[in-house]
Image (cartoon, rainbow, N blue to C red):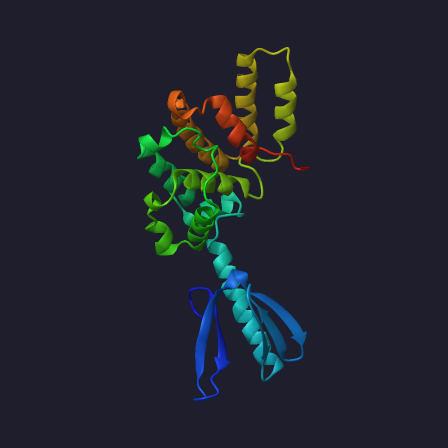
Length: 252
């Protein structure tokens, strides 16, 4: 078992009676089936291998080692992980997850990219989005040295949206959904009053760590909206895109 959180599938070489690595499989893509007694089955996306241990204790040790690797890998993940967990683990001074700052600061440094029509609305390439997701989830040097210029701007933007969309709980929390809906449905209120009440709701109900991330994101989106004469992404269009990723119902 390698330190890189990969499981080496091995087989007996019948010619020279030596063990050798046949291929490497990400721990997160390995399915383990307990076949009973000393037998287990290792299933990958392409193949299935049956393995027999010498003793029950050997099997327990092997499965225990795999669990440790899986837990270690999950600790480095950012997608699908609560913001507070990522903030605590990364210990960043500004309280903003690395993935959010990495993408936003890159886009800030390329104003011409922000002028592209439909930014944050036009879909990126799935292969690029999946690759970026894997890199950020693995963390380490690959994530720190990631060169985003190799990827489409739309793919980078989709990766940022995917991060927020995959959070177990939205940035604004689950308790704000109903109060927000009721506030927006009140046609008797002036827009300025609605905005002020919405601001008060956010400040009152959103945890401080989430507010830091929200302010950081909104400040950037304000920059994007300032270029709407070129990119067509007005505050209204941006709210349509980001609204469902920042606030959703607990029931839905």
